[in-house]
Length: 457
Image (cartoon, rainbow, N blue to C red; front, top):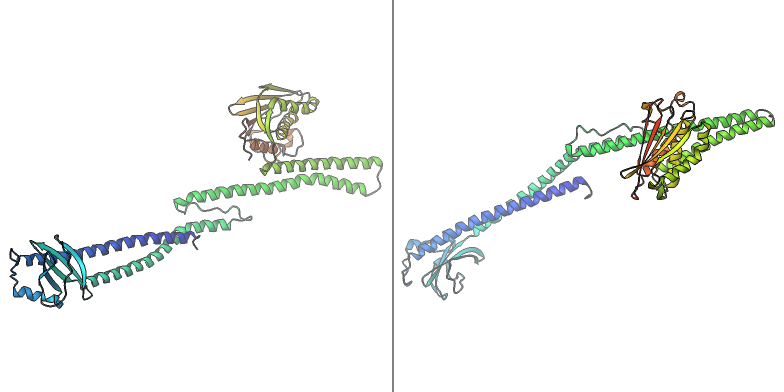
């Protein structure tokens, strides 16, 4: 129960209200009690002073009138007095006391008030010293005490009733306050695999929850994009794998329809092998892309000389460049290093330089620049190739995306190379940019962090 937000709000609200009501009730009770006792004490002091005026200066004669004595004649009147010497000896007392005595302590030479009990009834007493005597005036306050008790009971019941009402009010307030949260929860509940377009309405919710709603919507936008990419990926992968599988199946079926010559069998097997190679290459690249995208790639980071690794790439791809009479050159800082995974960086640079060769013109050039850019190592790969339309630059990193065959010169590819490059750069805490225009070649800029504080993912 106490894990419920509504319950916590109600309990917190009830505690605040209860403490406030208790403090208010206590203040009212003590205020009324003070007013009543101040009134009683003032009356008793006036009576004591009145008696003092009727006592002679030497304290031996008392000029009490019959009217005065009648007021103190019986206990029913509720008034008492007693006159004592400082040693406690009783000099005079009212008939209303009968055989009772008002309590007295020797040495009481200052005006003081106290509440005592006579015949189990509460009585308020004042000690009023004059010369060598002490006048004690008392009043039965049973009625006043009962009044305070009644007031206390009424106040307690009122506070209890207000607490019950406050509990109900707190429930309504909590319910009202959590209604927008409930609506957000209902909106989230309606979002499913088949309904990813549903969003939390940010217009009709309190400003305090707009940030939460906006965060949810941003998360669902990301999920929808990821889900759509996943569906597109599965669709594209199926489509791409269908072609080599169809080649394998068709060649197998045609070859098996009748007896063939050795040469025909050989040609069929070569076609099947080539299709299987294409399919295997695509599967390997898909697995690599999945591994890199999952942020669980087991990369071994070490200090790597960029000039050295780029020389290895050029050496690997030179035979391909020589077929088109393309010259590859490396320029820049030969001692520049980065902290990364050698195998992944080799894959990255191989893909980029390979594209620069494939989409280049005959007798073209590929220039590789190694530069230092603040905390980054910058590698630029420039080619003199056919270039790309600007509208394609934002899409070239998408999986299976390929430029129009008419513009790419009919060069075939799986459309996964740059996607893999982007993931490798991301895992190295860097970024990758492409600039290109039709007929003006392409420049690929790769920024890699140089320090050892590279964070994967």
